[in-house]
Length: 233
Figure (cartoon, helix red, strand yellow):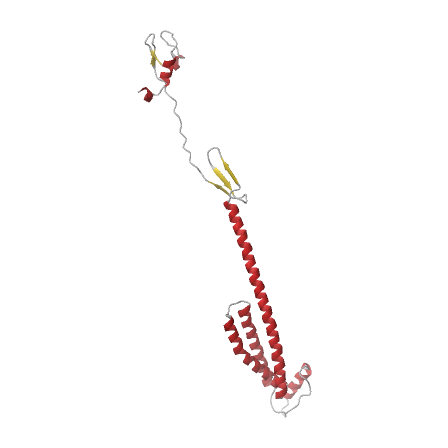
């Protein structure tokens, strides 16, 4: 077993060492054939886990039980990908590969927990802002509806048309009321008979003086000439 000369945190020197080891035909094994696929599997699985967590706790498009089950299923694949990466990175040194795997998984787990907490906080903030905006919108709509339903000015014109003006002053509702107007037909004066000369005449046409004898028309005969025909009958 080849012992690496560099520690895991010396990334540049360690990467160069792994590359030289992989291209040295005298040394057994090809560490890049484990490092590259293991790293890709680990990254793809981690991205999928983060996406599931986002859909579960932020978007709430997945049930929490379903999201947790999917994350638990993907976790072994992530750990296996990290181990393959560490095994090639540590040049087939199993104890050091296990230790590096544990460090990477622990750091990743801590990062996922922090990200999950942030997602939960953002989700609560989003829900709170959405409910508050809905309540404000409902309050505004209710106040507008009450303002428009309650007339601020009510006038009646001479023809009996009530006018209701809305709270905003821009909406005018009118209600037309039909009023029947009865037009009185002027009474047609009736002819009378002069009590002095028996001459028949209409008093108003002769200024209430008999055209034959010149006598003034009596008051009761003037009223009789102005009465309608129906009353006379």
